[in-house]
Every structure is written in C-alpha cells, then in structure tokens.
Length: 287
Image (tube, rainbow, N blue to C red; front, side, top):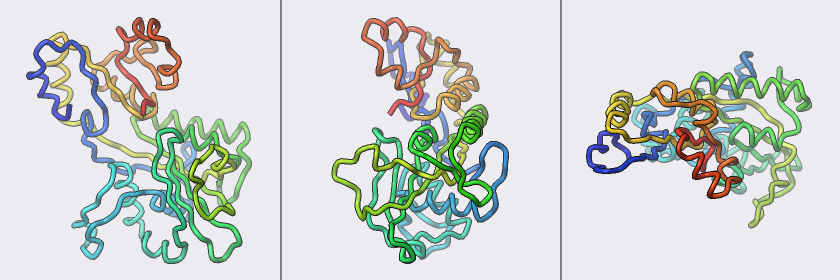
C-alpha cells in the first residue's frame, strides 16, 4: 500500500503488512556519511575510494548525462540512485572510470548473496579488480582485511568489534548502512552458477550511511489505523536496529517479543510462527 490513507477502503481488514522505504519513508535516500569506521573520519582519498566502489557497483544510470546534474533523470533504486549522485557530487565520473578500468562483467544485487558486484580490468596489474557492495554483515562474512589510515589491516577481533560498533551506531540513529569492498581476482567473468567462495577474501574499504526521512503523513495515518483496531506490521530488508528505530518513532511496539529477523523466520515451523505472529510488529532483514 503506497498511500496509508487508503486504509479507509480496507473494510474489515485486521492486519496490514507494509514495507518501509517509499511507504513509511519518503523513499528519498541521501548519503549521510562516507568511509568511516566507528566515529573516525577517513581521509578524503579514502572516502572517494569508497564512493568509487559504490558507483561502479550501482546499476542506476543517468538518462540525460549531457544536462546539468540538477536536471538529471536517474533510473534505479533509491539506494543506488543516492550512491550514483553522491559519487558524482564528489567529482567521480563513472564514464571516466570505466574508460580507465573497463567493466568485464556485472552482478546485480541478489537476495541470496545480499550484495552487488562489478568486475573490471586493471591495465596496470595482471589480475582484475572485483568491487563489491552489500549489507555490512554479509561483506564482513566474506572479508579477511580492512583498509584503515591508508593501510590494509587484518580483520582481527579488534577490527570486527569496531565494525560491529559502526553498524550498531548507525542503526541506533535510524541510518541505513552498506559496506564497500574489493579484491584482486584472475576471473574475467562471473560464473554462471556463483558460489559464496567467489567472494571470499575481500578487503573492506569503507562504509556508507544513508538517511531516508519519515513521510509527513505517516504518524497521523498510524494513529487512525490503531484507532480502527488494525494491527500494522513493518516488513523491511534493513538492519533490525534501523527498523526498530523507525518503529519507535511511529509508536509501534518494538521490544524483543515484537521483533523478528528473516533468518529466524526461516527456521520457525508453522505452529511456532502462528504463536509469534500475534505479537510481531517488525520484520527485518526480510528479502
């Protein structure tokens, strides 16, 4: 349901499942922070590198690149559009980068892997460049190292702790977070059947945080729905902390008993699920 006011037409409905982006929020993603780990600001070069990876793995495109940026018509998801714009505003030209690092193959976002990737020829090296963006938890699971202070460091327990703090800190502020990573690889194309091992040994380059504000009419619509005795459930692919932050803003119950992530949902039998559904108000990481 794109318009919450449409609840008036639902008659005897007792439950509404609603997505988050573009329904409860404006769907107007804006990049808030780039290239940071915990609360540390990275160098401008590091931030540009992070944005470069994001731009190269975005499937969004500009229909009228000859126009001024303010007049661009961009086709793509809200997230990928925001990434493309942020890179362009930072002075990164994807066309120029593609001329230097020709694209060999592209792997669009896939719900199984929860990432997108782009494979490029590096004329100065024998191997090719694999750029990857995705959910931080996913990228961390594939990574062996991270870039920090201009150097590559092993992804040890200290580094993992810093990354976890970054993820939780962003979620607690209602921000959506993606991770950008890369590695050198001999392959010149993605296999027809991709296995997870293909993405192993990534180096995390940085994080990008987005803000997508609540729609102005949502809080009032929620009050009307609650008054009508209808139970509203938010279903989103975002991090649980981000979803719960938004739920709290809307006055929804969002405690442990009211919250479930997709991996838990997959492991419940029908009886257990039926018992839990009565209390659930937020489903997160559901694709």
